[in-house]
Amino acid sequence: MRVKSLFFLLVLLLFFLGGVLLYVFWDSLSANVFLLEGIILFILLYLVVLYRRILKPMDIIGNGMDLLREQDFSSRLSTVGQYESDRLVGIFNRMMDQLKYERLRLREQNHFLDLLINASPMGVVITTLDGELSQLNPMALKIMGVRMDDVLGKRLDQIDSPIAAGLAAIPKDKSQVIRLNDANIYKCSHSTFVDRGFGHPFYLIERMTEEVMLAEKRAYEKVIRMIAHEVNNTTAGITSTLDTLGEALSTEPGMEDVCEVMNVCTERCFSMSRFITRFADVVKIPQPSLAPVRLNDLAQISKRFMEGMCNDHQVRLRLECDPEVGNVKMDITLMEQVMVNIIKNAVESISGAAVDAVPTNGAGESVSQGEIVIRTVSPAIIEVADNGSGISKEAEARLFTPFYSSKPHGQGIGLMFIREVLSRHGCSFSLRTGDDGWTRFRILFS
Image (cartoon, rainbow, N blue to C red; front, side, top):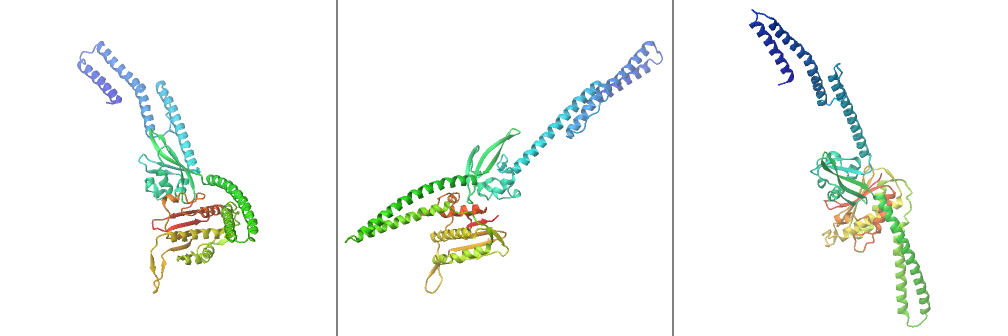
């Protein structure tokens, strides 16, 4: 029963007691009866004062609890002129001031952290305890190439993104460097933070492409220059000696076979020099001289230049140009060489694949079913697609690593050259074999 009800019950009981005394002793009123009635009246008056002293502070506390329940930290209680009540009011108002300050501080801190996470150059991916994505900052969405609405509530292994698959494979409290098929390199970390007693998993994605590429370039430039210097000096001395010795022996009878062997050795020295020069040329790629060029013109030039090679390998070369594609700034000479390397790799991929042949004429001659498509897409994308042997998942991450090649006798120079030229043009690019079996080298101009 509430305290207020008990007070009212006590008052009613005293009124009833006073009425009973008057009723019983009405015929023989005495001083004792009046004394008892006075005592009852005094007690009633005292209860009124006590009610104001006790229940009013309790009402104030109740009002304060209502404010806390509604989380109204801006309202304050007013003093009533009673010491006990005003003391409670003062304590409550100070508590509300502190709560308001703490709440405002936490809101400002959370807002600042949200702004910091959203503006961070690192990708931040936060998951629930069940491993479902709950929050991604803009950089994470950009790196993964997805939209927020498409990935919320999904697990990392359910998202069609190479970086998501790499993140899903990272053990807890571990870091790993992930190379993608677009030559980008990311350092990814899997860790947890504690919130309300629970450890929430999260991932950090740091782009390291420029730093790693610069370190790789410095390393292989130094190695190539040193090797080229030693090889060229050595071959120059050998060829000079062989030429001198060949001239001396050419006049001697019966030395024709020896001279022929010496000529072969000389030619081999020149081949070695040309071989190492190809590596040195990668280091000497000039800075692009940018000028507006129609992307469709680049596609048409590349098709005309490579048609002969494709015909020799019985590969069909098609062109699909989007008329909406306009001009882009590029160095046409360097970009033509890039397209030549890409199409050449596609032809070699088709030639190395076990593609069935079908008759094309009455003579029983057959041609390969290999096909290459040069395609332009608005606003500024050029793509070379082929139905060759494709690229394995293991090779995708290593494609643009210096001197790596999936070909038995490849040197890894072509993709190095492509990476350097496209990076200097500020292009985004990717090389990937899709589920349909087509391998696509896509270049996006910024």
